[in-house]
Image 1 (cartoon, protein in one colour):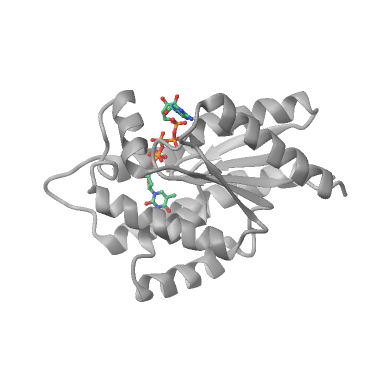
Image 2 (cartoon, rainbow, N blue to C red):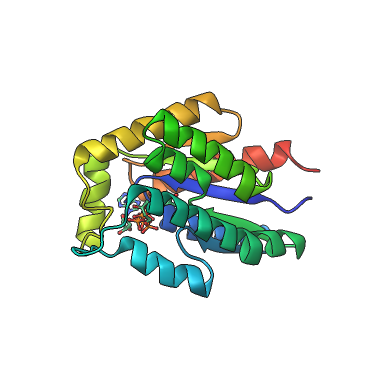
Length: 210
Ligand code: T5A
């Protein structure tokens, strides 16, 4: 079977990191070798930039344009040094966020949507996930979970209305791409979320056994 590229998307606290680890373990049991990467992050340089992006700063505020371009610079780096080589070397790739995050978080007006479309063409070079699991959550619950875990970062401190709008953009994207993006409600207990993830991936794998 061709190596697969699986992406996990969703708001903060929706359970992406937890589910990435769960999928990796599940694939291991099925005899499939995989790696997990994350956005922002993955490579040593990207991990440094992740800290810069997430840190709250009072003096030199990251402008909206800079932020969008930083996410794409990081994506280019992780495609070049993690995603492409891993897929080539027989590994499945599980990515905690990918380009849909930019569409949902930065695609807040027509101009940005257009730029993101062009950046996708330039940076992704046609590398798109075989399947995306979108973990849906009410932002109030997501931020509550993130808060419980520790101090909130620069982006997590944004207003509830920012996250509501981000969620509605996610849902719009999901509804337009139902074949490739599967929505999972994650407001239920984790064991039920995992059960749903397993069923979706098993069904998808059986359909794609080639
Ligand atoms: N960003 C990123 C953009 O704006 N544009 C982009 O293009 C990209 C790529 C990244 C930030 O950058 C932004 C979005 C983000 O703000 P991040 O830290 O990588 O930041 O991502 P977050 O979404 O902030 O990650 P979190 O770690 O906060 O959330 P996760 O990974 O979704 O959740 P997880 O698995 O860590 O779980 C959080 C807590 O909830 C519990 C877990 O045990 C954990 O304690 N939990 C549950 N509890 C109860 N029931 C369940 N079903 C649970 N599932 C998990």
